[in-house]
Amino acid sequence: YHARETLATLLHAEGPDCIAFTANVTQALNTALCGLVCPGDHVITTVCEHNSVLRPLFRARDLRGAQVEVARILPDGSLDWESYERALEGGANLVVATHASNVTGDVYDVVRMASMAHDAGALFVLDAAQTAGAMPVDMAALGVDVLCFTGHKSLYGPQGTGGLIVREGLEVVPLLEGGSGVHSFDERQPSFMPEALEAGTENAH
Image 1: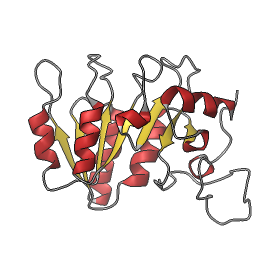
Image 2 (image 1 turned 90 degrees about the horizontal axis):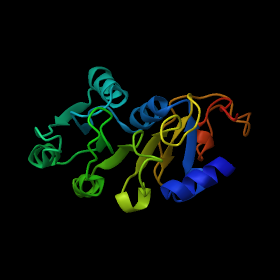
Image 3 (image 1 turned 90 degrees about the vertical axis):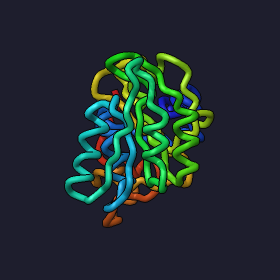
C-alpha cells in the first residue's frame, strides 16, 4: 500500500486504489487494451509504438474485428498531426500511444493527443514505460484515462514489476481472474480496484 501511495504521488493518480500492479508493462498494456477494446471498436495508435501495444491491438483486429488505424510520424521523429487528425475523423473508441519512443527518445505532446482523442469520443491509454521516473509525469494534467508503467527502468525497481493506473469511474474488464485475498466465495473477480486487476500473488518483495 505504501508503494501505491508513493506512485500515486509521483504520477499524480487520483489515489492509491487506482493503481493495480502487474508483472511488467507488457501485462499492464495487455490488461488495459484487452479490457477496453470491444468487437468492432475503432482504435488508433502510432507507428512508433512498442510491440507491447501493437501486438495486442493486431490480435484484437484479427480475433475481435477491431479496426486499428496507425498514425504516421514525420522524418524528424515527431507525430504527423495531420495523419492523427484524419484517423480521428468520424470518431474513435480508444487511442493508445507512447509518451516517448524507446528507439529514438522522442517525447510526444500527450496533452494535445489526449485532448483530441477525447474530443473524438475516445479514451486515451498512455504507455509511460520510458518516462515514468525519468521526467515529470502528471496523469491528471496529461488528460490520460489509463497510464501503464514498468518498474525496471527509471523507477529503479526490479525486473518483473509494473502496473497500470485507471482513472476513477472507468471500468477495465480483468485480463486474469483468480485469487484476490477477499470475497473468496464470489464466482467472479471482484469488480473494485485494485483487486479487479490483481489476480494472484503480487511481487511484494
